[in-house]
Figure 1 (cartoon, rainbow, N blue to C red):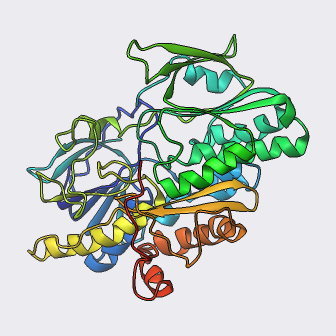
Figure 2: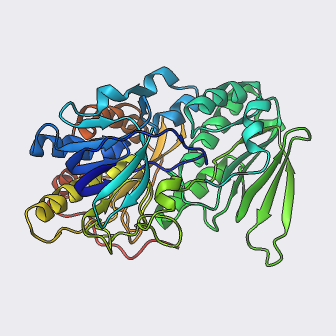
Length: 429
């Protein structure tokens, strides 16, 4: 059992249902305990281990490797090598923080303790990933290595890209790999033999009108078919069939599609220990004030990253911004003052539409564009592609994980002469 005065839950979303059952007892006390060493967890650990000193910050993380997951899009698209996507966990967890190499099993917020121990599934999918070389996913280190070979092997037929009806990490990522794959098929000469489909559980292509408009131009010009409100529920690899639930059907009607290539975004959820705890809302996400990031019931708990219920996209860019607000509010609470700064919901999704092309989406809780650069980011631009491919990864490894990057807000004000850009009406559907 490990205790802390304050607890930050920055757990990464789980894409499986299995957890270790071996146990370990640490019996340690920390001023700050962080659950999960994703981007938000590492950034927070770096910030507060500097402030509080050695041995005062603990971080619970069972994994040996830390991956920069936005890199996986480029790996799947044949642009980057998978070996360059990660580092050993020991290299990214700050030296002044204690790494508790285990999983969190239970939370007791009233007593500030966490008991330690050393998602939803699609029928036919777990074995399908291993059985069918033409099924792939960029959401996993192992399976992303199948994506580019599958794209190269594809000789025509139905190519399906899916988005499930659960919150996912970077909801734009399934489209990014679709555009890269479609471009590759154009170059290899098989595009005229292919039907490219995006089967999304949503009723819109993208949740912010400005960027959706740009994406609609892309899909129209490249003859990509969008099937809205379609949720993948079963895969039959023997017949190469994918069964989708029609979410707009009152009777729960389904549709069956033949596939020759399929990129699947798996359903996601918080890990079992979080989802089954007293910290979450009805959907299983940590129930926080979306401004202060402080738990609505337990003031000693804050949450950022993938596991909390604020209505913003789950991206590294969002976690970077959240970590800055969290630092101020945690510091205030540690000093006996109330949390006082309000996170605006900033997130970013660099929507790669091909090699050398990207729509740089940035927006807030109200789905208002919150763009950093003094140009129209709703258009495909080569400059934004290189920001995504070359600049952001350097910021991630060298600044964010070390606690020095809270997002581009300061640079945005500089580029827009002290404002967040021109006022706009709410831009969501």
